[in-house]
Image 1 (cartoon, helix red, strand yellow):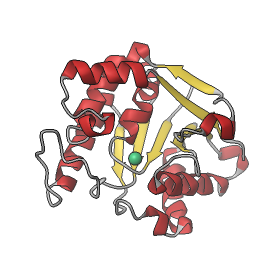
Image 2 (spheres, helix red, strand yellow):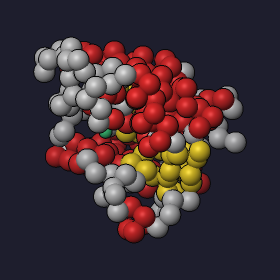
Image 3 (cartoon, rainbow, N blue to C red):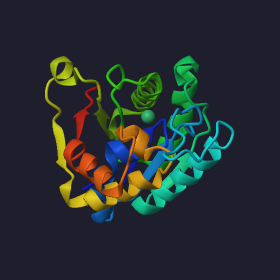
Image 4 (cartoon, protein in one colour):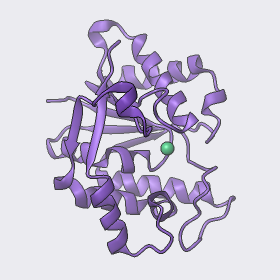
Amino acid sequence: MESHVVVIFPHPDDEAFGAAGTITHFREQGVPVTYLCGTLGEMGRNMGNPTFATRESLPHFRKEELIAACDVLDIDLHMLGYRDKTLEFESKDEIATNLLTYLEALEPSLVITHYPGHAVHPDHNAFGAATIEAIKRMEISKRPKVWAQAITNTRFEDLGQPDVSLDITPYFTKKFETILAHQSQAAGVLGDMDPSIEKLADIIKTKLSTEQFYTWHF
Ligand SMILES: [Zn+2]
């Protein structure tokens, strides 16, 4: 049984699409979960469907959506305040130092992050790499386990089968509610131009019914 799970991703909605089922699995066991969210996703292209956000108002909406999603999941949230789409240009060393402060305070038994180099978006890769770097700096006896999420199409060829695979069907409702909390993103990310609730539910059921991770070996 885990004592505390810390999820470290750069964008509001990474937790929803990538880990909401896994998070619910832990919350149902009474395990505390904390989300360290790197940015407010303020440079995102999705502005709602139908459109309701503008470039100026997007950060406000995404912050509210992130808070709502974390309420649905019943988890703690820290917004780290980095700028969206710039994490690859930040110093990995400095981000790692910042993350380490949180990890030393929270003392997680498990950290969930992106698999550096296999997570498609440069922010995902950079934040995953900084997370691994932060944990490397911890004493071996104090290091949490790390589950790294790869999302490239070639992940199975490149990395083999993930050793952690959760069927999240039992947690579907929570995952769906968490994704819908990200109102400005849900339809756009799921690739549906004409979203009905039923259609979105179908896409999530067929495409996002498992959440998979690779245990990181230091
Ligand atoms: Zn993302």
